[in-house]
Length: 486
Ligand SMILES: [Zn+2]
Image (cartoon, rainbow, N blue to C red; front, side):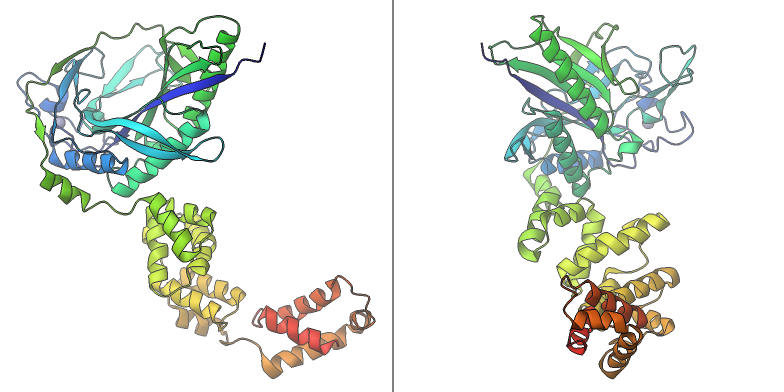
C-alpha cells in the first residue's frame, strides 16, 4: 500500500483596525491608549435610546482596503446585529456586515511550494465594530487564575474590517505570505497602518486535512493569533495534530481551539459556543454606494507594492530582492523614488538607501519621513560618488557629516577638508613611489613572478589607498601600481 499523503485545506479570517480618528458609529476618539473608559459615549456603550450613526470616513477606508485586495464594491450593503453575551459587549450585540458585506470577492497572489504564483481568493471584506477589552488581574494577564477582571470600553466601537479568505491556503508558509502581502497592500491603500504590535491585525484560521485515501477531516477553527509567527506556528501545530489523528484512524472533531503562544499548542475550548443570532440592524439604513463615490475613492488608490516592485525590476534593473525590500515600506519606497526622480542612478540610490540611510535610521530611531537628508540632497551625493568626484569612503564620510550636522553636501565636503576629484595624477604617483620604496621585498617578489594569485599586488594597493586617506580611486590605483611594477 502506498504511503498516505495529506493536503492541508486552510481558510484565514483577519481583523484589521481601520484608520479613523473617530469610531464607526459615534464621534468618540479611537485612541485606545487613553485612560480606561474615557473615550466612550452612550452609543458605544449601547445605552438605551442611543442611535448609531455611520461614519462615512470608515466606509471609504473599507472601500480602499477592499480595492487593495482586488475586491469589487457592492452598491448596497447591510448591517446586522450579531447577538451574544459577554462583558466586552455592553449592548449584547455587535454591529457587523456579516451578510451582504461592502465588498464582493477578490484575491491575493502568493507563491506555492514550487515557487509558482497562485491566487488565494478573498471571499469578501466587511465592516464591523470592535468590542471592549478585558484586563484580568492574574499576573500573566490571562483569564485563568484571575480573581478580578476589568473592562475598558475605549476600544468598543472602533472600526474593523474583517477579511475572509476561501480555503485556498495549503501550508503555513502560504498563510504567512498571504497575510504579509495583504497587510502591505492595505497599508499602501491608506486604509490602515496595521501596526502589529498594537494589535491592529488579528488572525483566526480554519484548518482541515484531505487524505490521499479520500478521507476528509473536519474543520477546526483556531483562534487567538496576533502575530505572523503565531499564525505560522499555530497552523503548523494543527496540521501535525490532525495528521496524527487521521493516521491512527481516528476522527478530527469539529471544534474551536485556542492558540496558546507561550506553550506552543492549541487547546480545545471548554467554553460552549456563544448563542449567536443575526437580525438586520433596525437602527441603520442600508448602505448605498454610488459608482461616482467608488470612482472618487479609487482615484486615491496608489500603485500597489508588488506592482511597484515589478516596475523597479523591469524599468530600473533593481535585483528582485532589493525591489521587494524597498517597496515593503511605502514611505521608504517614496523616498527612494524621489531620489531617482532627482537624477540618481536607481541601482546606486537603492544601495545607499538600503545601507547608509537605513543604518542611520536604526541608530537614531528615525522614521524615513523624518530623515534629515532629503532625497534630492542624497541624489546629489550619490551622483558625486558615481562621477568619481568623491570616493565611496569619502561619500560615506560626507553622508555621516550631513546627518550629524544637518547640512548640505558642499558644506560637508568643505568642513571635512576633502579635495573633490581625490588624489590622482602626480600626487598619486608620489604616494606609489614612496610605498614601493618602503616595500622592496614585496616589489621583488612581484617582479620575479612569485605573486601568482596577485595577493602582494593587492597588499600594495591597500597601502596606497590608506596613504591617500581613501581619496584615490581604487581602479586608478590598481592600474598605476600594475604599471609601476612592470
Ligand atoms: Zn462613543
